[in-house]
Amino acid sequence: MLILHSFWLSLATYRVRIALHLKGVAFEERAHDLSKGEHDLPEFRKLNPAGAVPALEGGTRQPLTQSLAILEWLDETYPTLPLLPSDAEGRAKVRSLFLLTAADTHPLVVPRVQARLVTQFGSDETAGRAWSAHWFREGLVAYEAQLAPGATRSHGDALSIADLALASHLVGVARFGVDLVEFPRTAAVGESLFAIPEFAAAHPRFQLGAPGI
Ligand SMILES: N[C@@H](CCC(=O)N[C@@H](CS)C(=O)NCC(=O)O)C(=O)O
Image (cartoon, rainbow, N blue to C red; front, side, top):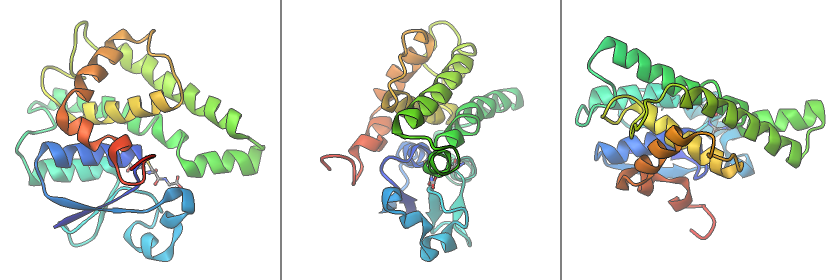
């Protein structure tokens, strides 16, 4: 049985959780409360020396880390409902969109960066929120410019890992109050993604530890 090491609010974990649901792969989830520093404990660092979720255990000799690496492994191991296009150009495009959110935006807003802004630059909660909103917005500007008019998916007609990353990006966008009005194409793709049952079931707000759950 696969074990997904997670935290309810984790955007990177959300990307992986959606794929597990879409592919119908059985898994158990083990939550680590980032707000209590549980990802910094020595036992967790053995799973992921970088001290970050997600980590996926049970399918490989060593636990897998990094959502992109985990998603590609899942896609190769469970090919039902492929999440990468069959052509090289399509795969390059999808990975590019994925990285726009998961590599160029998300790392700027994670707790370890927020904490460093406080200790090194005297940031506070208001400044931290403005910082995160800024980077999420920057991601939207670049994403919007690459979507086709009337699109319901990030690339072509099929779901891809870019859509998983976009859904996670949009959770951050909502959390930090970024207005989507200037980004109608991205908003439309997001609306269509969140209507998919597997995206909805995997959403952070429905995970153990979320307010009211
Ligand atoms: N690039 C990694 C990001 C992993 C990551 O930073 N995860 C966040 C939660 S979404 C985390 O565990 N952060 C811990 C921290 O910032 O201290 C991935 O895509 O898996």
